[in-house]
Image (cartoon, rainbow, N blue to C red; front, side):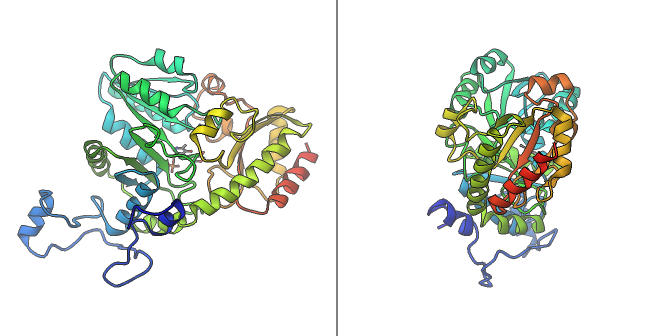
Length: 392
Ligand code: LCS
């Protein structure tokens, strides 16, 4: 029942059968620990010989339902929910990398995902090389004998670079490495990395999966039992578990994932076309525009171009600031993937932790503005941008 049906059916039902009470909505099991019927059962649960809950950091029915649902959306076998997207990234890195080992990543990653590798894991002897993963030759050249992980964000935040997941999976596997894909920007509705050959897919659930800008969370999905067990063991020892209340909100948000993404995507397409034709706009980077360098690849790999775009005004960062200060409907805030439209400046906000050289190499120019389009009326969003651009 769980894993059958189309994507919209799975969003509403997967992992969410009524429990013994008949509750139609999965209840919030707000408990830290679970009573054992007797000592032998407690011991058997700890030994993994008997199924059953023990302690919420290790598992909980509400969190479990959230994991089952998202896992079904990406055709995975195992899912591990985490306290945040960074909790998911940390779990993947720490589960797969050790002293003397190396990872290759997308240069234009979400800033902290890169900083975690380059500045923190480096202290423990892990090496990292960040390249433009849309260029397969750069990926191939970066691989070393000790490369254990290739870590791709596609589309990438905020340069919207698209990486060929199937081809990078083949490179990684040929070198004995695993491929993890941060699928946050596409969401499970538009891209299924495991179907394309990735070993791991992960998300900041704070974005599209939850969708209402009221939860921080993350999730990791895989098909491999050994990998699933290793990732879960790492998450529980790090202690970056999702909370039952978070899981309840995410389950509620996921029910409308497809509806939200499809509507926001239609708005994003209209805005991208409007901006590309505007005389004050220098360039627009949107996966759905034929001007995007990986437009054809994205059409093959994704079910749609998504809801986020970046652009730069001819007047550079000063013009961009005027625009960001002049919008009235769009909100000046970081994050994305919610029902509301958000606008931000990556160089001074989400990607300020990278050096200017690193940002430029990753395609994040000083004047780049990121627009995460929501589900408002498209005409209202266009009118808002139009009045803001008239002030530039
Ligand atoms: N991966 C991607 C692609 C992200 O965009 C983010 C957050 C994370 C991981 C981390 O997730 P978190 O821990 O925040 O749940 N991206 C943000 C952004 O672009 N603006 O604010 C946060």
